[in-house]
Image 1 (cartoon, rainbow, N blue to C red):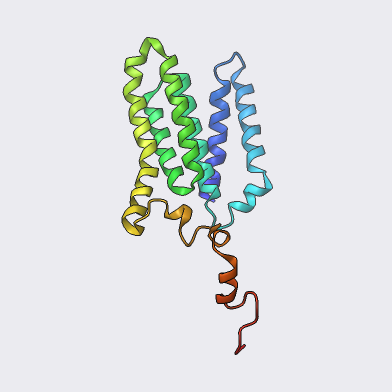
Image 2 (image 1 turned 90 degrees about the horizontal axis):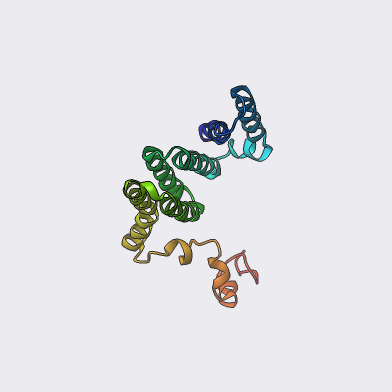
Length: 188
């Protein structure tokens, strides 16, 4: 529930920040931000997910705040926001594998912003490099952990507990050895 509340606050801040660069009045910007936050908060799927013990609300909170901080970096050229974005990305990567793709996408976007920002390219480079290292740290840590513990860095993708693991095995041998599947076992 806490992640749900933080993601609602993040949507409010994201919309307010995105609209503040234009020539709209503060009241209009604030009203639009409140409407966006209320629409997000009233989503029945999110209301349900925030009441369950699943990782989606936590991931969404990290995702939204990573976007908030990245947009602040782009609009204000703030290196501190980029570091906060990197921390949110690392947390998102450790929460769900979807975060790995988010980190890759934001890493590419950060490099693009770095090259586009040519007058301050040298100053921005250090922040972008730190950001990329921070965003890549969580997947690298996860792969290293799997390599040390399971002796297979891709254990999550091809190990016995992988959700598609039962589809990759020989179904014929599995049916005859697994109780409760295929032919009834004697003694039941």
